[in-house]
Structure formats: C-alpha cells, structure tokens
Length: 239
Image (cartoon, rainbow, N blue to C red):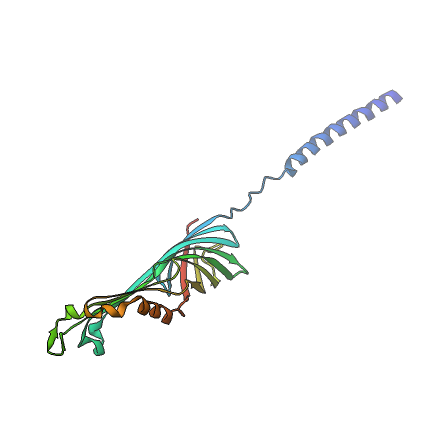
C-alpha cells in the first residue's frame, strides 16, 4: 500500500514538473520582446526663401533633431537708368546696377524647440556698378568737345571678402520634426570687410581716376563692412 502511494506521489511530481517546464518555456517565449527600431534622425527638406540678398531656395539636411545643415542660394538684380532721375537725365547718359545674392553653407543648432543659432559662410555675389557719359557736347574756350572726348566714368564695387562668415538667430524650424511644412524667420549679418572699388575714366576725365582718387573712394566706403540679413523661409519635408 505504501509503495503504491509513493508511486502515485512520484508520478504526480513528475507530471507537475513537466507541466511547469512547458509553462516556463511558453512564458519565456512570450517575454522575449521584439527589437525596438531606433528612430531615424536623418531628414531632408527643400525650402524657398526671401531675404535681404534676394530670392532663392535651400536644401536642408537634418543630422539629428537639434542640428541641421543648409545649402542654399539667393539672387536679385536691380538696374536704374539715369534717364529716370530728373537731375541727371538732361546732362548724363548712364545707369547704375546692383546685384545681390550669395551661395551659403550654414549649420543650424536648436537652442530650444523654436529658437536656433545659425553659423556658416557665404560666397558673395554682390556687385554694384555705375557708368556715365555726358549726353551733350561741351565748350572749352572756343573748342566744342564731343561727349566721347569728354570721357566715360565707370565705378565697380565688390565686397572685400569673396567668402564671408555669417551668424544669425532664428525662430521656427527650417525642417519640420513631425509635419511636412515648416516656417522660419532669421535675423543675422555677414562680415565682408571694406569694399574694393574699381574706378576708371577715359578722355578728359582720365586724371580723375588716379590711384589717389581710387584710394580716397575706398576710404569713403570703408564703413560698409557688415551686410545685414533678414530672411523668411518656408520648408517642405521630403524625408
């Protein structure tokens, strides 16, 4: 009798242990978590912008949520004929033109959710030029001098640095974190050193474009070393 009871006990223990092992295996399989995919920090967006250098666009590369790289450009040109200026139209033929713009490579670091610091460089496309020639002949003593003989004046102005550093502070985002469209406003400045001036004349005006006169003209414009930039941008996230 005792042997029979011990046999039932041993059989019961074996059955219980087998059941526990199977249950433990099932729980172990259920407890294995699927690997969590880490979020992809990379992002790509295209933007259009208007700033104090002109109109243009950008490609924005998100390295991580706090840091972006921006490659862009802008351009604008304006020409004014002296004929539209009453004081000059009667005596001078000529025009003035200004080309503004640049190719930029910038890095954005987000100080907070909506504020970012932008630092980088700009390849300058800025150029200003003026040319003029008398509209009418002039009389010197008893001699009448034709406009071509009086001479032509040409002035060309370019930044002192072809590639200049830039720094700015912005509000918004150039690439959205979770949406497609983003907006950004940025205020900054680029330092391009004192402008370089080219001053040439022909005819009777030739003596006025001496190296001394050109140096004086550059000194008169030496204050223009910083170009302010205000920018408005809309971005469209692609990736």
